[in-house]
Length: 283
Image (cartoon, rainbow, N blue to C red; front, side, top):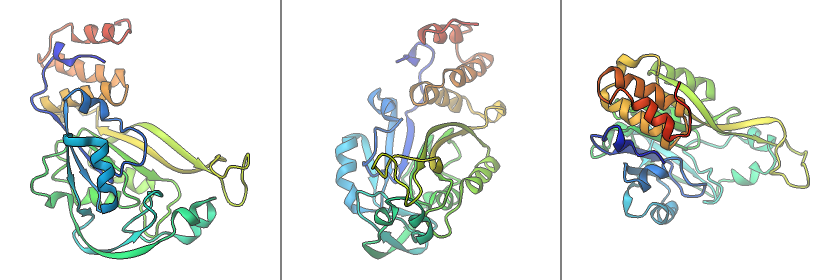
């Protein structure tokens, strides 16, 4: 792991916010930032059944919020099994669930609950966000649209986007992409592209073995790297660290370091030092 103190010191920790932080999946990509003491973490999950798992996963390094984030109105939460990860403020779309093997069970609503939602911008004690992770079962775009102020400093977002919508009135990948581009973000990489088998065909006697049908993906957007004049000095440093420690994107990190060199914020040999430390020959 590269030590960025050889090049610069972060003026303050990277503020990571994880919305829909139920600890039921693999280790998050920002974990290395927490281990290195380079980040502070805020998590959101309105499903109280997930609170214990979040505490066990992140310990004292996290500030947890129990709000349901959406648009600030009262909504009906559709509560599914906690293991399914499909509880949502949107109603499951029956035709889509039937289309995929197993999803009629995954999306089965056990109960409904009237909840008061909050907006991301209304959380007064939440710091401005540098890196946002979201997995909120269809509520991503609404939360983003009501969190523009908190995202002013944001340099990277990881979110789940659907290719086939599993919920009624769920924005698709295209709608989310258009909105993020309008806010000055561009796609950087896919972390995972999930395919699933179409019912009733099952491969190798295991309904989880995928066919070709796209279901959803985890994608990372970054602050537009073609508009470097829109980056503050702090944003350049933070995206450099995130690029290296979270995304394994050495070339993006170099892009940030070159701009830092031009601004005389790091030594002229910073890029070469970084490339050698990564085991890559400077060019």
